[in-house]
Every structure is written in structure tokens, then in C-alpha cells.
Length: 204
Image (cartoon, rainbow, N blue to C red; front, side, top):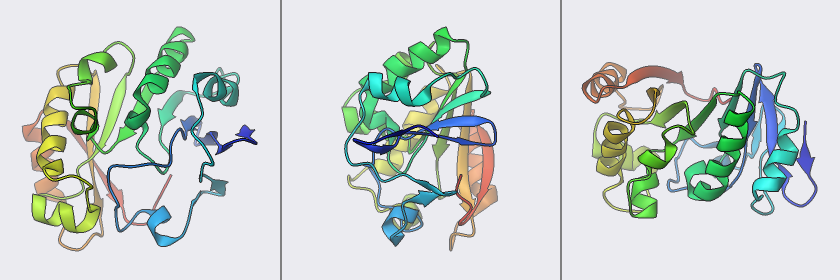
């Protein structure tokens, strides 16, 4: 799998999809995240970056995307923090006929200070957004956001995203104490998104 000596693992394959790891930085400090528990490996791929790759490095790491069915921005950081690089790479992959998905914490608008969902339209085919809890108190306990108002900002992002992106899926982790999976599914439905149940400690 492509590895850049300057930065670490940028692209890695799981189940026929090519995942892109473009940052180690995040808007959350989730208690269940491997990196906050001393592990940077996902299915034998070492995802700790020693820098942040630019567009050309990411495209080089991707190589020929023809054999894979989807390009997914997902590492152990929040890919929308690298929005310019993300959009450039997405455009390049779409030009090659590859669908693009972003796995995100849904805090891009809060982080950038504006609504970025219109920029994703036409460049991104799908979003997977981590809801992780049915209320703000539980979300804050499990996800430990860096900024106040993150839970509400994430819900608003979901609502805006469904107007711009063809496929928006909201996820929550079954196994986190206090998390009500059915309540999370109801929130997704209310916001017009799909819902997917994830399992605690199953990463990748």
C-alpha cells in the first residue's frame, strides 16, 4: 500500500475501497478513538502522520484508482480540516469516474466558520457523519469536543448536508455506555438522513 516516507501511510485499502488519511488532527477527543488509547493502527496500517500531505502527495499515494470501487476520506483525524486538499483530490477522483465519500465528525462548518456543504456538492457523493449520542450531554462525555456548541453544530451540518449531497448517512456506536441506538436512528430520520449502527472497537 502506498506510503510516503515524509509523512506516513496516506492511502490504504480495506474491502475494495481506498481510504485516504490526510491529517492526524481532529475536532474531537473521543474516548473510544484508538489514537487516544495509544494505538495508531487500523487493520495493520500505521496511520500516524509525520506531516500533512498536499494534493500531489495524496494523488501519488492513491496511484491507479481503477481497481477500487470507492475513494473514502477517513483516517484517525478529521479530513474536512484539510478542505482545500480534500476538494482538489475529490475533483481528480471524480474525473476518473470514482465515487467519493467522506467519513466526518460533522463539525466542518463550526471549524471553518461558514457553511461548506455547497462546496461539497458535485465533488462528493456520500457523507458518513458521526452522531454518536442522542443528546449533547452524552456526546460531550464520549466525544470531548474542543469547542462548545459542537453537538448542535453537528446536527445543523447534517441538515444542511442532506440538501447538497446525494447520500448522507448518520452513524452511532452500539456499545458506548448510555447510547440509545434507536433514538439516534430517529434523529437521523428526522434530519432526512440514513442511519447506520456501528459496533464498539470495530474500526475500519
